[in-house]
Length: 237
Image: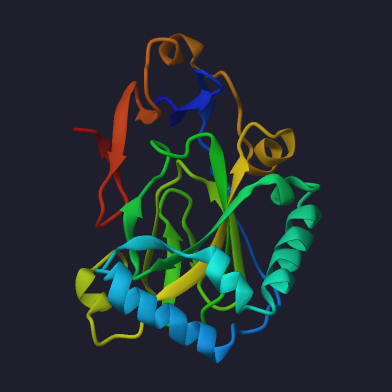
């Protein structure tokens, strides 16, 4: 029998092992559309500063956006209400938040940079015919304004066209309106409520964890990576 996936992540100054949560939590909440002038600001930033290529996911300045976003607090409150309903209490309020833009996203996992976190995302763009796809679990969730997601950072995922079975850069050509914007929170994976919601077990391989010096994800006893086009796990390197 193959071994489960294992995420090795920083816990303080030491690496700790854990399972990879195979649960994707998703819903739709009611949030107003961002103001037109703010959307225009974002479009200018994306065109003149980010230069997003197909598959890119990059941050936008959140502090500046908040000054011109009257319903920002409404968005945060809607997310707080959803996470509380999941039994997460007030963990969202204590978590780092960022504003992100993506032009699709190749299949990847974030366990080598954010293994100590779960991602919690709120999409604020309209439906542009894109889904977020988690090939390991089979979850495929339509992205639209108010789509909310919570998932393990070590779980492979991508943003792909709704009628496709994998990532294709040609689907995100310069003349296609396919940029998605979202707020993202980094929830601490060691929080008991977060771990319970994502069904994560800790200290699954302490021996290996004690020998490593960086965050990584393993499968079948060896370091693993993700095929950027299909999302299939493969040996790293």
